[in-house]
Length: 100
Length: 150
Image (tube, rainbow over all chains, first blue to last red; front, side, top):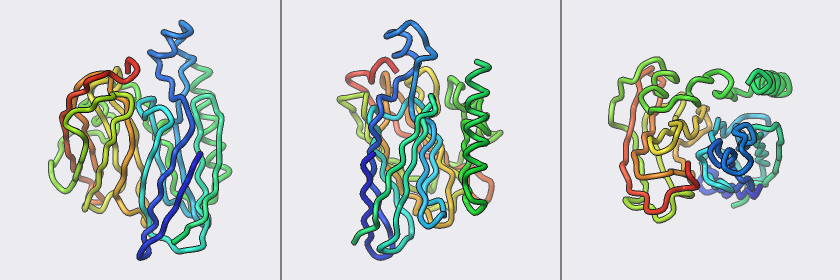
């Protein structure tokens, strides 16, 4: 996952990209004949100092390698920790410093 | 199906067990499972919030009028309403739900995501206000090339 966190006037702007195929049920059925092979990110969270600043429950209809942007109130030098979990239980965590 | 439910329940409870108490994260896939299987936007909103009475104000939604690639349509939205949660739906794919945000005190409610739409349709953003009312914005767009068969 790529995560960039830029702060301006106390507002942190985050741009993140998760590397994931985001296979839908239909795509999985076409490919392998089994809908249950569908796999996509189901939950994305971001925390700073243990406090949640982004919390998304997601479906198969985010794009492949989904890009998402969000904003929160923060301060320079803190660390943003982003984690996603997919339908098969895989998880990826990425840390990004909050920079001016 | 049972295994899947077991897995998601286990993961959900694991996540709850691991996270500190101050974290407000809610996995709506676990707490509101029927939202994600609903085929229409109306049904999904009802399953999520128990009503589908929408006030169409206070929410800004920007998306292209024509999307050349249905596999990655940029969707920007924001709201001035003090929000508890924000949900994104569309009516072009087999199921309606795209994502649901749980909103906290530090969040600035401005977001951008890229979504898939298998054909032309309407995107609906629903904001659950702290006043318990539902605010919404809609945008209908043409999709030139469908996104990966939904």
